[in-house]
Structures are given as structure tokens and as C-alpha cells.
Image 1 (cartoon, rainbow, N blue to C red):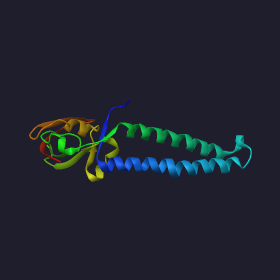
Image 2: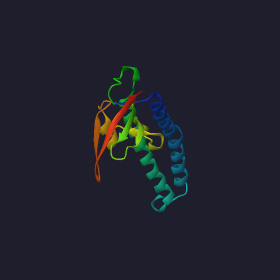
Image 3: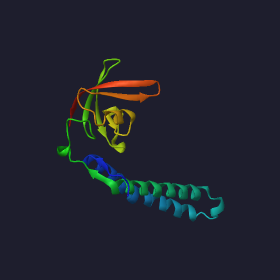
Image 4: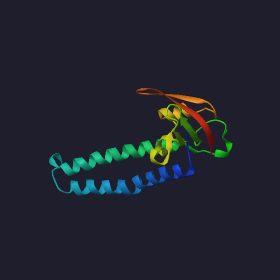
Length: 157
């Protein structure tokens, strides 16, 4: 069994909806594509058939991976978290000590990360650097061109 991964209710709902789409819509479409291509005759030279079979195997792999993720996924109860430390689902306000710029990031599971909306994965370099830190502490994050230092300004939920 894999490691438990924590998600928001919305994040888990999105994963379940994606699985349902793959199983009920995409799987049926691919099966129909294979049947249509098979009806066209000689399978050894039938590019449509081979493409549909390839798509089917990729689809089944994606479904299996998603089922694995869902089997270890749990909804996180934010009320039980320690809000003095940066943890998954924390909103962390940080200041780049070199530039003085401030940023707000929400720490989330990999599949929920969306940099454009300020959601970064707890497994990203910045996410890993912030985990467990408290207000006033400095996170040192190794980047390709050195080390970035971020001061933790605030933590909220």
C-alpha cells in the first residue's frame, strides 16, 4: 500500500470526477474506435486499429494510477492541524530575504498544485523548504543557482 496523501474535499472530488470520465466516457469511446477499426479488415496494416489499441493501453494505465492515488487519498480535517507550523493546506506568507518581495502560497498535494493561483506542492523545493517552519524562522531552499532564503511572515488556514 502506498503512502497516504491528503487532499481538500474539492481536490478529492476532482480526482473522482476524472476517474469517472476516464472509465465511463473515454474507455467506451476507445473500445468503439477499436471495434470500428477492426471492421475495416486486415489488422496487420491497420494504423487506426494499432493507434486505438495504443490509446487503450495508455488509458488503462492512467485509470490504474488514478485508482492507486484514490486508494491512499484522505480528506484532511484542517481543524486538527497545528497552525503554528507550515503544514499541508497552510497558507504561508513568506518574504524573499534577498529582494524583500513577499508571497503567499498554499501548500497542497501534488495533483492540486497550481502556481497561477498560488498553490504549490509540498513536494516542490519551496514546499519542502517551508514544511515544519514557524513564523519568524527562515527557510533555506537550494535552487540551481544557489540558495534562496525566505522568512516566514505568517501562517494561516
